[in-house]
Image (cartoon, rainbow, N blue to C red; front, side, top):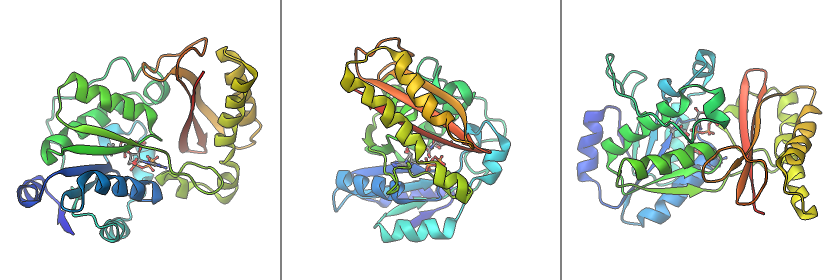
Length: 281
Ligand SMILES: Nc1ncnc2c1ncn2[C@@H]1O[C@H](COP(=O)(O)OP(=O)(O)OP(=O)(O)O)[C@@H](O)[C@H]1O
Ligand SMILES: CC(C)(CO)[C@@H](O)C(=O)[O-]
Ligand code: BAL
């Protein structure tokens, strides 16, 4: 496995590696969800192509300094996991290694980021789009794999490559879960044992609401009320948002007429977890 720590090293490595090249952008603290994305990348790259992973905790997408400071960064473990997965190249830029101190250009998304995480994490998706476009320019990948867990991120990145004519295929991959249904997340390790035991209710709240579909319910309000009730039964969590949006535009809807997404973010103390459920009428 090759490793590059600077953009110059990365460009040198890229020039020597076989195509197609498939990139898996991450912030590290790798878990089974990330490893599944790497396997999907290998499938897309083929046995003779290149699977590349970037590990960079992107400061400009964090809205809370404490969240950035507490983000786990077990780099040696992460590198061992990439190696074991047969990754060909890992890019590990230093904290300050991706941005000029006087950077003045940012990629801005102005529609799909209005709700959900975009509303409660101001500037988050501009930070994501900016770093992902930079990674695409550095790696020039043929394709890149992203998790459906970050459903709004995936929709926004598909929109970015469409609107800016970026020649990269975006591949989505289903959410990988713990046996009790909790979506895997690098932040799960920061939960207290009590909070970890309570957290599977996030998935159950969304599933419970979805079950209203089979009774013919189509109005948004009962879905939101059912999920909210289940979440609020927890003595621990605080709801950051709970919204029902159109799956394509990510704008709130009053009636489920097309594929829709019931999405939530919750806090356990300062640990923020997200999950969502697709609702098909
Ligand atoms: N449980 C999961 N299943 C599938 N893909 C995932 C999962 N968790 C994260 N990913 C994907 O991995 C990529 C890197 O995500 P990231 O490094 O932020 O991990 P994370 O676990 O989402 O961390 P956190 O949720 O704490 O930010 C993203 O494309 C993300 O959607
Ligand atoms: C795509 C990404 C690596 C950009 O920093 C990040 O938002 C993530 O890990 O999902
Ligand atoms: N997976 C999304 C990255 C973040 O929470 O900043």
